[in-house]
Image (cartoon, rainbow, N blue to C red; front, side, top):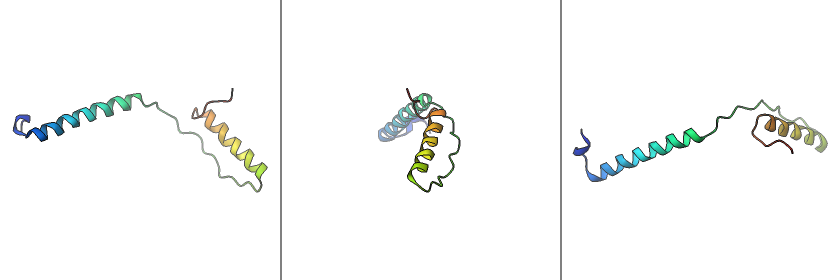
Length: 72
């Protein structure tokens, strides 16, 4: 079937589909590639100070993976 054989409404959908595909291609080209960060083991902290240590380790891994800006 040629494009001339479809209705105006169908032509509109075809045009919209083409625009959507172009936008998706452009957006995908702009999305930065990110690495998967190392695993953070589950916390076994029994008190708040130990939990703070575990949380800070998580923050360090996020920064090292480039998923969080490093401290200034």
